[in-house]
Image (cartoon, rainbow, N blue to C red; front, side):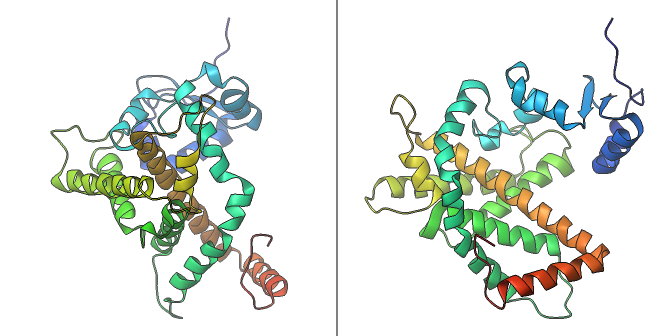
Length: 289
């Protein structure tokens, strides 16, 4: 007889929705490394121990699929990109995209990352109040756009605006599902139409020129699978959106929480500043730092 994992019993949906982070932390502390929950119609399991996470994501990944109910809501936006695809489709895209994220490539972008950060933070003034998360989102979105498209676009404002609308529709106005076609707001339809037009125009313009560029889009366009086949325009669009949306908000959130935690620990913040001053000695950081 299989032994069921411990858990709180009953429906946990409302408690989860009110504060997901706190809910998961409380469940892990109270019940241990694997917890049975009832958040939806299907049983849910919270895995905390790294061995369990490795078992699902690495050692036995073929036995598991992405949550259909959740990801089905995002396919109208992301198509079959790295976020939503799986199996052979995901493996092909992952293989084709891998060279673009080699360590040497990331290191080559470090100067540009520093330049964008400096340009934005130079606008800040001592003593003013700022929305730090919005600042971090602006920095990371511009970095991702520049690494993706190079000089083809000046900023990530259109992509960032589309992301804000998507979050509003999918997590605030209608939690856990994106709007169906007849429910979509005019703003929602327009902003993604403009987004697609911008991305496809960049792809078409890049295909029509022989000019060599060093951005991620060029590397993705040049990549070939074992049969010598590259990505079509639709596949490129889907992969690009996945890289942008998955890449910039996660980094912005990590930075925001880092600053928040440093503000709670002034002694650690002081050590960090002291080390940065000693190592950099007035210069800007480089990749090896």
